[in-house]
Image 1 (tube, rainbow, N blue to C red):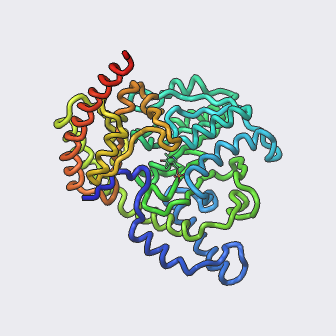
Image 2: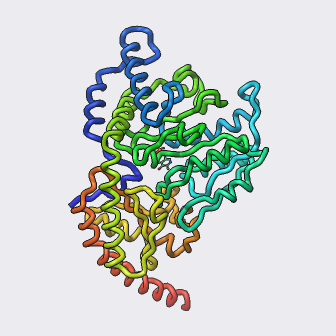
Image 3: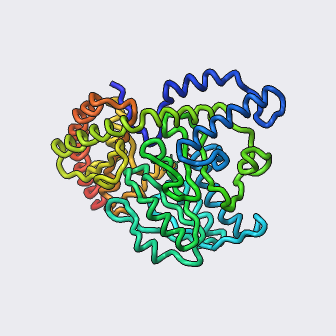
Length: 398
Ligand SMILES: *Cc1c(COP(=O)(O)O)cnc(C)c1O
């Protein structure tokens, strides 16, 4: 049995998205060209923009298509430096950014780079469930803060933040608000007017769309500076010939989310409860990470102290099951997850965690299969790891 439980990393294409993209393969015109080929591509891109905008409650001209969620996040954070260095005439931005300790690496690493470029970056703590503290935010806001970036749903533990309340507080202080909503859009209702945000990041491949395409919502009248300069594409906000095929696929993906999301989330929540109870009943000494209720329905992060997450992942892989660990695998390091450490988890608990992320293709039968094989794997690894520590101590004493 092949069981894919890593939907927060990426998702398969929705069959409707496949159809849409296959049909669009013949359309090769450059949307910037004025002839018939170009006009056809332009019309399709603008139709896609309308669909994406409508899905998040934005106006069409507030949606900028970009190459990924990472690019959208980089654009927002870098825009801040660009604006404060007077690259945009007439705007000067305040010189501090506030973000959280649990953001996606594309926000954290960009923030770190900005620090070296003279921007003051401050990090909000999170509680044991991964939620930020509004009082701490209030204390950190002030005349110096230009931008606050807080993710809407965390990719590792699924915890949701109250973006509307955060935005209200941020706006009272005169700063701009960005949210990385890559894991939220298409899973929970997201309306940019309701949230009040100035910038919002989306990515297609987390919601059954193609890889390599995302969108950035930029509220009308907000200062902006392109990350990628050159052509006049996207009204000068993102140079580079449009990824027409990807953009059309993304629009179809959000259309399908609008139809399927609510029913699917209810189904995922039921399966998550089965998973949670099943793990609790079958395995000792476990910790669930993330918020018990304010969380993505399809995401369950659990720690098995005494068992390395990477070992669990590999053993599950041998059984045909795909999950992930919170480790910073991107950098090839086995550092414990920065998200779990920020929630106050000790290193052993953080090392022993796996993320199970379900999606539209996940079935109850698959959940039961995981529950069948997991207990044996955990006890096997726990037994071995004791032997390993003993061996290590022995070796060290020689
Ligand atoms: C996947 C992800 C991103 C990055 O999106 P890409 O399109 O893969 O670059 C950013 N933020 C969160 C929360 C994500 O889960």
